[in-house]
Image (cartoon, rainbow, N blue to C red; front, side):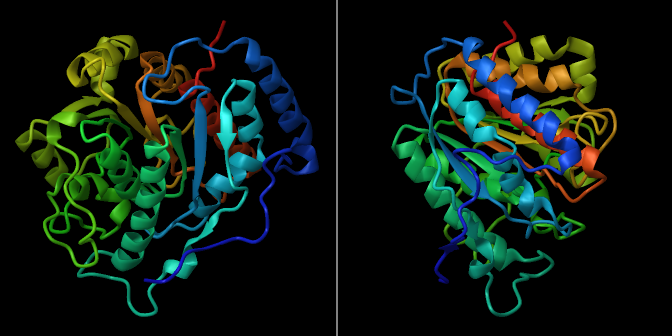
Length: 353
């Protein structure tokens, strides 16, 4: 297996250097100054599965091999450069971050990485396995594993990692898409649309994924925000009776009731893994993402999910994925990064009062 290398260039992290053109420097500085005030608006909910003082270990999974659009690999660096680490410190977290991100290109096999119609399958497998080992190590240390994507194929690694330590972990999958296509049902071959099927063992035996054993049962995942499903995915969800809250359900019940039903279904004491694809939110809120679908979560609905999950005290892992700084203009990029940072802050205890 190729050895994973890390960038020798330290990313700005502590102290944080804002990523912005001069025209946006003022807005970045303003956001960072406000983050210092956030220390006075921190929840006091006990984090049941973490050591004290609570530590968040940040994983920069800048990987784009699970889908065709370039730019998503830059998401982690932009979130960090925008001041995320200092914002988390202001929320009284101990932040563990190496200031170097992995260079996943070193894990790319020298020859064709496709397996059947699955694109870049060998490459995706190598990266996901590396992410799995990293997240597992973090969870064993009783730190919160915060993974910054990268496309959603990395969740094969993040969920497998948390499940290695917490076999009963419940997964809350926030997404416009179900990402549960199998190698047989996928029409695109893009693996960011397949991670859940691999985690559940529905994908069957797939070359290069021998390391990934089924670690998620259908009764331990809840979807929120679904609105763009392939026909085979609908069949899979119904066949396995997987709990789903589509945007119609959010409209009908309200996000507050949806979260109550989610926690009642999974159980109030179960360790939780939040895997959050920013395309779950409406494109008017998060424009710089690869597969936007109109009719998504509002700004407040998206943040309420994170706030309530923090209040459970049960979070052991959080993924924020599919932030793509190269899509749209600079305003779109800045807006998406700002929302990405604020979602993370909400999941880690920022309060409105």
